[in-house]
Image 1 (tube, one colour):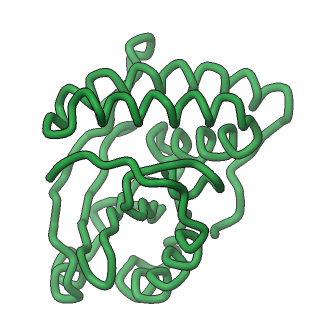
Image 2 (tube, rainbow, N blue to C red; image 1 turned 30 degrees about the vertical axis):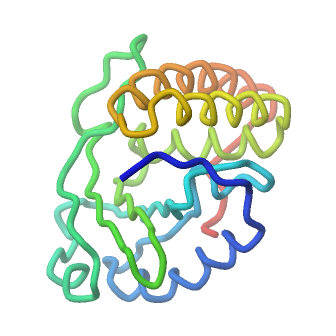
Length: 186
């Protein structure tokens, strides 16, 4: 599938909200959802994929059959990117991934509450929401990467991930200045 960065779509938050009730019925009790990724940052161009994070207490309590039965394709157990300056145990990067094509393309990231990879997308999302210059630079990088590597997701992410590590470092400083904490579920 080619990498295409589309202009920001003001309907993306509503598309997240349309998927939320179904996901809450499939998730373990006590789970909660956040709209993450570039489609969760108003005005930011992005791949037209709604990224949703389901936060759970225990990854082992996820009912895979329920997600598959509801039309989600199981992307499997995977590990998120680890910034090069960090030495994190595998449990801090572990997640389950499901993909939906209908009613629209969505990636469902199921992560353990309090894990590094559960906090990372929320902090970075909120940082980009509050820093339009950083968001604009990130958008330009994604657009250029998609232009250079439209059919090569490996190359796209090999460059995009370290760029996001730079954003994360700035977001950490912002977190300390603002006393940022995990936001309420979306």
